[in-house]
Image 1 (cartoon, rainbow, N blue to C red):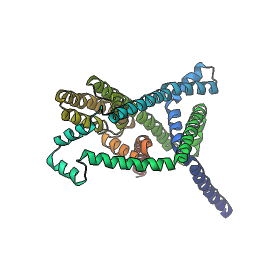
Image 2: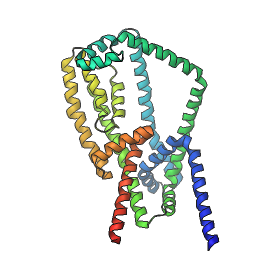
Image 3: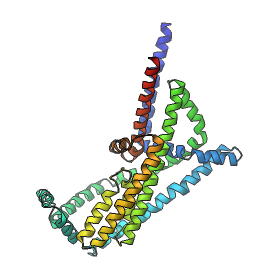
Length: 351
């Protein structure tokens, strides 16, 4: 009996050691593994639908689903990224040739600020655009020297990105093909009561799908609406600001305002009061309404999390895990609440 306990403890220690070791091996490719698992989980229903219509051929169904992901997700992102880079380069060239009077816009926007804000900026030397530009130029020169000294590192990072992208696609294929089998293995390996395992795994799947689907839909809607209104009002770089608004809208409630708020101030500063008023009204009542309606409907409804929990967990998750945090944060919050609910119900039933 004592030998059996020693064997069990030794095996548990081995499990911990090899798990930590495997985690360390996967850590450099955490984002690739994470998003590979997310994409596989999101498109698992598509793979199952194709599996039935392709005569129960798992390899072919997984390959077709992967092609669908490339066409629906990866290719549009690559096209938007390429167009965005071109637009940033165009705006930079116009600034360099003096076609955009950034200094004049800066001074006019500064004049609109309250006196207390102007004094605060003056204490940090941020009211003189020429001085600020000189500081930025000096900083850019220093950064360029660092970048030149680390050109090899940049090449290595680019190579690592390509490898990580390949790992993600490779992982998506096998997770799509063997997803059910892997799910059963995880379910059998968890040392919980069967009802608890079913509840927690179901909660995990629901939260991941609702968070990714909901936040991406909200981001696309807000980015599209923002880009359209910027384009209609003739704001320079409408695509750039629309994409930036879509990215920042991953932050609930406050994200998109970080773009359209300064844009409205800038329009007021440059004498386009009616454009600023239209932008302000449109963003508050249309883009803001889209966020207030869609996010609770797509995220909060399925996850069954209060709006304030979604906001705090998203902000905290992104602070800890970067862009991955907009999924990890609400997921941890949902599992936290589900686990404590199960614990409370178990104690109540025992009483």
